[in-house]
Each structure stands twice: as C-alpha cells, then as structure tokens.
Length: 143
Image (cartoon, rainbow, N blue to C red):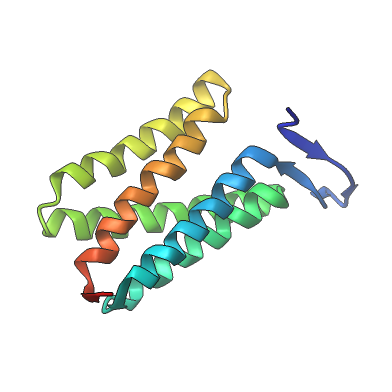
C-alpha cells in the first residue's frame, strides 16, 4: 500500500507530498464531525465549532500539501485546539474525555518516536470521540 506520494518541489515548497493514510483519516474525521453536528443541533459554543473546523481543515491541508509552513500552521492550530478542548473538558469535569484528549497527544508523540503513521491515525479517531462529547455538551437538542 502506498503511504505517501512526493511530486514537485518548487522554491522549497512541495506541491504534493501526500500522506495518503493520514489524509484519508483527516477527511473521515471531517465527515464524522459533520454527521455529529447534524445529530446534535444548535451547538451554542461557536468558538468550539471554529476550533474544530479550523483544526480539521488544517489537518487535511497538511496531510495533502506538506511543506514546513503548512506543517507548523497545522501544529499551531492543533495546539490551540488542544488547549481549548482541555479547558472545556476540565471545567466540566469530563475526566474520561480529558484522558482521551491526553491519549491523543501521546499517540501523536509516539508516531514521531516509532516512525509509524498508525498512532497518528489513531489519534485522529480518538479525537473524534472527544469532539463528539464536546459537541454534545453544547448542543441544545438532539434530533
């Protein structure tokens, strides 16, 4: 199975340097988040929605068009998202989901250590669970 594709490099920017597994995982995450937002209507925390969607789009772009600028922009978005998610989970005493959020970070770091995309992909999937809980906390009704 092809894990990545490197094509053209112009002025130190990769036009396409796709990590197919992580790209598909990011797109799947976006799709599942959209389903959750259809199920949980009227999410009152608009900042949460902004953080989730900016992180998802940043992840999709990073795993499709990879260069240093996009990679660090994605890391900044993930850092902002982590802190916002952590704050909401902490003030709502959501200890299980707080643990899952920390597990996402551990999975991401382990990806760098063991040189495998599997833990990174798993962090995408675990984060879906965390975000569905956050969305449900701020939803006024379920259809």
